[in-house]
Amino acid sequence: MKRTELERRERELKRTAKKVEVLERKSGRAGRTIGQYIDDLAALFRYDAEEIFNTTDDLDILELIERMKEDLPEKQWDTVLKKAVNRTKVKQANRAVEELSTFIGEEAGV
Image (cartoon, rainbow, N blue to C red; front, side, top):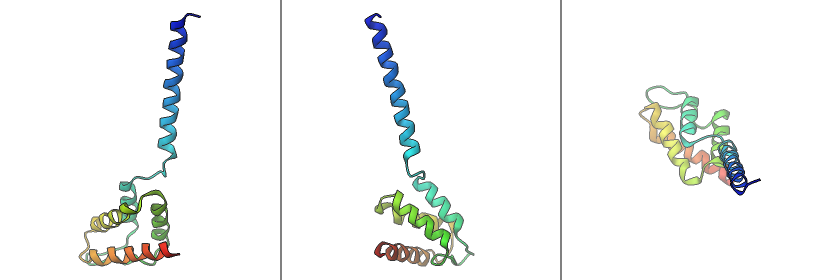
């Protein structure tokens, strides 16, 4: 084989390995982005115009927060909580964020 043919095959192998690596990184991620956590958390809330009712006692919210804590760095947790609560446009948003924040704090101590 000519040297150019060998070099071409080597380049193709490198490209293929790079594509596989990129796909593994994408699929190997925890699976969710910050935006997806915000959407999912906001979808789990039960609320009216005044307040969110299930911030401390819903198991689905608890499970989602546990996954979020595993997947995202700690500095992003508050952002997810605040944006998910703000998406509901309730009047007592601060109280809901505080309840969820203490909920995260209790889990961290366990």
